[in-house]
Length: 529
Length: 80
Image (cartoon, rainbow over all chains, first blue to last red; front, side, top):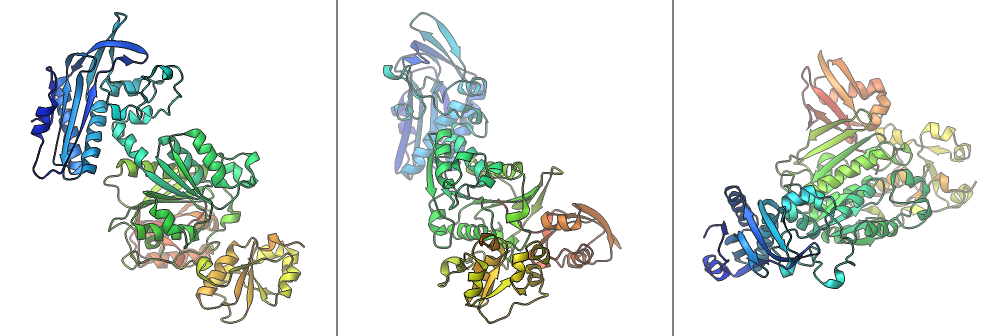
């Protein structure tokens, strides 16, 4: 039988069924679309289908071939009625035989979704009031109508799909139906279609970090209809976040980011399942988190988390989208679990320590910079889930928001990278002794018996007279450049302005074997004078 | 001497005071070029922390330079 055909005579499912039987097939799935008695609140008596056959058959054959190739099924076919049909008549039939049921269902769903979206079929409805009218094919309707609901425009109406597509057949729903989220403007894209929308609805994405990058990522993924979104963040909202995280408001300050984000995203789109993980990403939890999602978006503001995520997605063979910003610039990198794709560690073999390159906490940023980079991340996620990234080579893309220049730098897998067995030890999680100590005052810190070491730059010390009481000064820039060495033994409390750089140095010293070295939690800014 | 187009990112741009410059240099490799520029602009960042891209492709520091090459120095950035 032909892969796709039209029939002006009543459809004969038994005959088609026999034609796609195959001894190697262990399963068969089919879909039947029937003429129903109403559309958009009007009672329908009968209807006529008309197709531009030469074009429509070609497109239909293409769809069936795509389904066979995509899902690896044994045989597939689709027959569409044309001519005059009465209520209850069979309007369209799809059948798939396959070794396994999963592929059979998926291919069947794909074919009917794509046929309704792409094949040019028109129908004329005859209403009980004697009126009649042509109704666009779905493709035209999706593009032309602003206000349609996620609504089945063809009368081909299958019971299994009825709720998913917004069936208002019951009288009590006629006027009380809640407004459905409307994806028509993305479904209208030929590369998306209903099949693409179904892929998004079936997908799950983990977003690590709900800050400047994470907010636009979460918003755009939620409204695009991603089925399940996980949010990882251990922070509470601070007033200084608001200029670049407009999902949150002044009244939210002090509340956990994940809780507020979940509320707002649920309000944006009830279709999406939001899962919150109120925690920092750590070596202890990252593998469990990553394993539960199809794709990971890395949106934190520190290298430790970025490398933690990179290592975890390499282990779990999951795709990931990374981004970072610095003042007016940003970088985006997509990772795919393919042999020639570089991970973050391939690109940056000497995993940078936080606070050593630039100073994230104090660098400052305008809101639209992370917003732009976050939107780029969301777009890369949709591309990956919809399969729109075929042929894309691995690269680091840099964006400069001042000059509006972007640059695509081709990146390769580093053969020296222990890509397959990575795992930077997360000292915060693995070390038995705490990395950070808290003190109320500088005097208390001195009383601890630890030698205080100020690693701030000289200019920072000059602006902070109390900090000058710390006699030992080893500026971080000098340590990084190797002009000064840290002693190989002793008991130290490392001090900087906010506790970010000191934590990095402490981790590094612990890794070098110094056991009694600690970082002042929160830095000098946290101390009472 | 080769004429090379250079572009800086992030903290290097701040230190250099410009996003791009064109230099005539005797540097034979990307590494030599960085060392020369680092001395001039006082970058204060060891090479090991950066990556270099030549003509829009990440390259090794030992990569030889030719006249007209476009060289980009990129530090990793972490802001979010």
